[in-house]
Image (cartoon, rainbow, N blue to C red):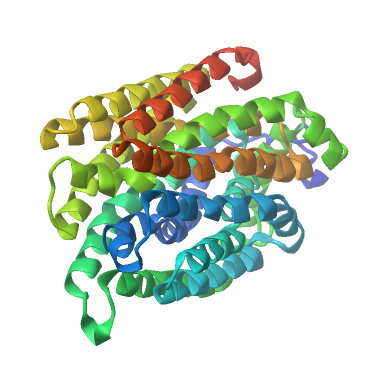
Length: 440
């Protein structure tokens, strides 16, 4: 890539102004981020809509809370085993084909959930959904590293990940409405209609990916040569300063990768504890009717959108990562404890759930600017996937743990305190990461 030898190797063309560089990145952002967010909203909806289905499905299929928690969590085991291979394949065959393949297969599996008839089938289907979706999220994080240097990444990953709470803002009311108004049509239950109708967008977006997405800077026909050089120069300049691990073994042997995995695990415990149980918690706070529950879940998610954008912007502006993660995680812990103590008061409970949601979800995109600050190339593909798979095992542990505790104690209180404890432990781990490693 030495074709702009007039400037220092790896720097952008010498005469680039900050304004021109900013305009180029703006063009990239408008082209790829809204599309990727739409893909992720659809993905996330298919992953967590089982939390809504639970409001009707448990009585229809005679499932206990433990069975629900285990099934919700088993998704992440399928995800865990196929994550690393999926990301390595994406790096080889290109993002376009692989992301499309992921979306189409999980759309098909998700739609098939309408045929659920027993515990075993529930577990198998959730596992298969995890296998189908494995590699999607870390694949996108990897894809963003092809376009953005690390100094620009916290803000852009935060923008992409606002898709998580946006999926809640859109998905909660949508799921509630489908389950409420389609119930009984054609002899099917509301939750069956919800699985079917919410699977269609995934398949359509998968097909659209083939037409719309580019594998990287070089193949983007919507950029001119100078814009490509500006972007490639920034990436080259960025990667010069990083460690390229020679082998996958070295990635697995890097203590920082495991440290990061533990931090991510603690954040994800909070995320999926909330995601899968939010409808149940809101219902427990005295809200009747699936549509009302659906509408109210939009509030904590909307709070999270605002918090994510604010903290992501601030982290890049100050080139500071640790405290920008620590503060939201502590707020998340306070929110979880508060929502439990105020469970009988709907308004106060929703306010605390909003704080919990904003804190927990905000910490996630900020987290990804930590490991991508020291990993690059194939080791980034493998490292991101390792961290994401280990961290996402919390997605297995959290819903199962809460379901088991709820069946044991007839309450979700202890479960929420446990999640808050994980967030606090995560804060301790972050504070022990050397600042110079991550503030870039």
